[in-house]
Image 1 (cartoon, rainbow, N blue to C red):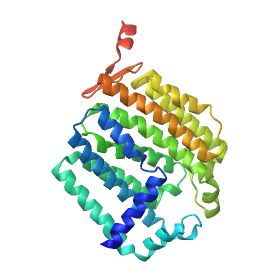
Image 2 (cartoon, rainbow, N blue to C red):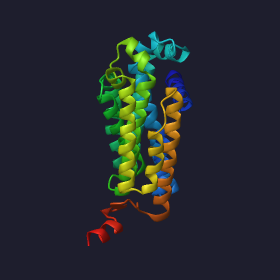
Image 3 (spheres, rainbow, N blue to C red):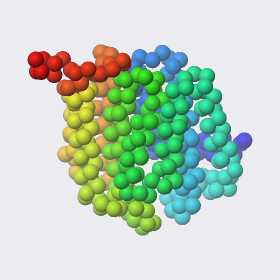
Image 4 (cartoon, helix red, strand yellow):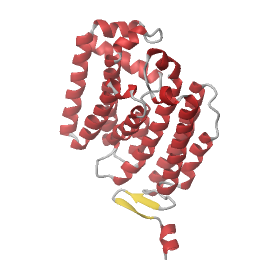
Length: 290
């Protein structure tokens, strides 16, 4: 029991220090934008934290052989995980059991992020992170699935905001494989960046930024497209710095999107207006079609 708790604490501290649980911040913003009750927010945010612990512990568990060979990850925490594998398995089973209980008591819709988000992340950790193209696609699906913790499955506006962040997840994963390019190439891991090379992968990241900007302008609000388009113009430079710059820009864009939804209860895209119960043509498009 003590070993399992220590492993969970190690995972939480390491991932929070690396800002790798950012999906929880996105989920919180969605919940606030949708004006969920404080109790609803607390339960769903707690569920999101447990789910993050599960997927990142599972990733560390599956990556253990590789991490033990890496100078950057072969530390006391990694060796502790190696020496307490049974406790790590028990911790994962305990997390799954706790989340199944919460979903059964509170909202069966929480099974969507658990099954889809957790399942995709397991596939990513076990296989897809080593497959060019599939690594980025998996993280885009994972980005959307993890955010469904923030709203009931029938809430259309929640899906719109989650979809926006799913495209952001694809951008972040594309930049992440650029950051890891040299280490992955040396260890024989064939990610998208290793397969395409850094220049073409950077072009892919910029293309995804344009796609996200277009989707935001069409379905959310034209101003949400401005920060990602600024990101398209930035040079790569140091990948770690570039990663943080893009995170800042996309964060500002999503803050505006969430704030707009909070104020108006709907989006105001060029072509589409979405509310909790569905999407319709925007007023401007309706006038143009007359």
